[in-house]
Image (cartoon, rainbow, N blue to C red):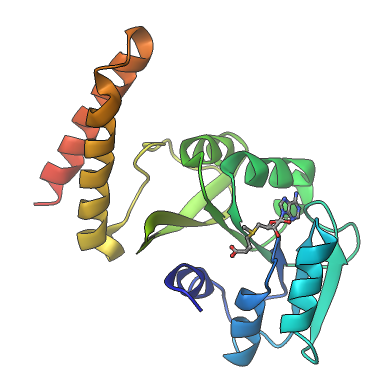
Length: 210
Ligand SMILES: C[S@@+](CC[C@H](N)C(=O)[O-])C[C@H]1O[C@@H](n2cnc3c(N)ncnc32)[C@H](O)[C@@H]1O
């Protein structure tokens, strides 16, 4: 299993009645079962092919499979993982069944892009970020564990607390800064101002970490 999935697995609580939404290959559920973190797992995917992949991986294991767009209608889950999709897709999956997600103990999300938009959605719709993890594996991946409840406003671009991954977070901020600088001169108006402000906040974070 790769470092991204390992980091996601590290946030799963022992004994959870977990559903891995958009599981595809089923590697995460397999790891959770084999390591004894959970004794049973539910797996869903919107695609028949990906669900078949998961079924093959989890053959003979104590797992339930659902062909579903987001959270399946049937089944009882106290926690969910939604990983490896765009931030808008993840927000859409939560929004479609917000009441049920709001009754879960926790949800772990890992967007491939539109991280800011997902954070904004979570903040506005009553999901509090309690843990963040950063992983680098050719790309930077941010993983968030959220619970139902009001959150205090935080920096939607830079996140809350990566003190556990401090050295990597420093590199991430540096990478972020270089990326913005590479296109800043092509921006105009409001967007240019926004990016200039973000650069200042990145510098401030880097300073605070010294
Ligand atoms: C890139 S794979 C990620 C697999 C795994 N979760 C991971 O993080 O490695 C994305 C999967 O999400 C599934 N997917 C996309 N939208 C979905 C939705 N609305 N509901 C359920 N599954 C979805 C896709 O079919 C695909 O198998």
